[in-house]
Length: 357
Image (cartoon, rainbow, N blue to C red):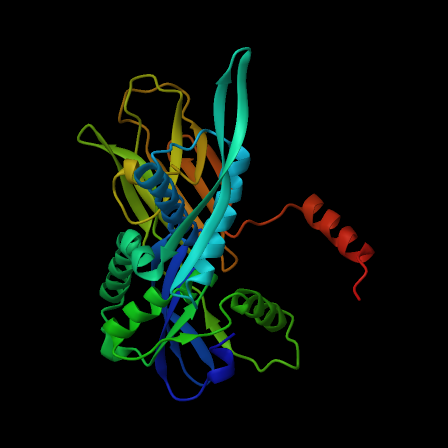
């Protein structure tokens, strides 16, 4: 959305996107009629929630150190504290100190059992302490920025503008870090609405809406795609399509085979990411399917190839093929969270019944 409205002289823009649950960083090349991704990276397991967790830990530490009190397991209180932690994070954007108040449950023994009582608690968190307890999280985003610059063979001198998006990018520590690194203040551009605006513009471009000026948007594969295989007795990830490959794309790699005599099937596990170590993926593979390798043959005899086909909408078709028998198996994975036909029809019905005032 930002790039389409500000086309003109060729330049590079860095987008620092710190959302509630994920962190993404992208370097875009913009000129008169196109937007192209030069480099992309991030961490799908790092976001504003991690900063909220640090505030919750701070509250527990304060209770323990100043009041000698341990919070008892209480799902309702935990949910309340999470909301208060997020609110404190937001308030510290414009205030040096915020109070956090709540009622903590304490069970007291009685002659016939126990009784729950609730004790009013107030702790204060200042911005300096908040930045101290979350400094390592910010450092992780800085390291990921460095990785993206390395990937694109670029430096800060090659960046014309730095754009902050995502609600958590409002934190002063983020803008201070980016100012220190780049030598200029970053722009905070509609952090809560930019994704929706960009999606609306993309939809308008797809349907060729005459009110939106035509622009070529170059899509790339955000992360490498590969499969788990065994090499020298160790399971590794063999990357078949590297990150930043322009979309749509397809690639086939052969040379895979069985590891046991008489093996009647092989399991194909698909990974998205840059590490060659399967243990580096907290959520595991993004897709798993089996290939029938009958008739049984000695280990190492079958000649198996794996093909990936990726389109611009985040859909991946993975195909495993036995070159000797011609048997193949496939699976489709949607990285964009694509909905099935029934889900689309149900949502369309709900929208048709909605009343907008």
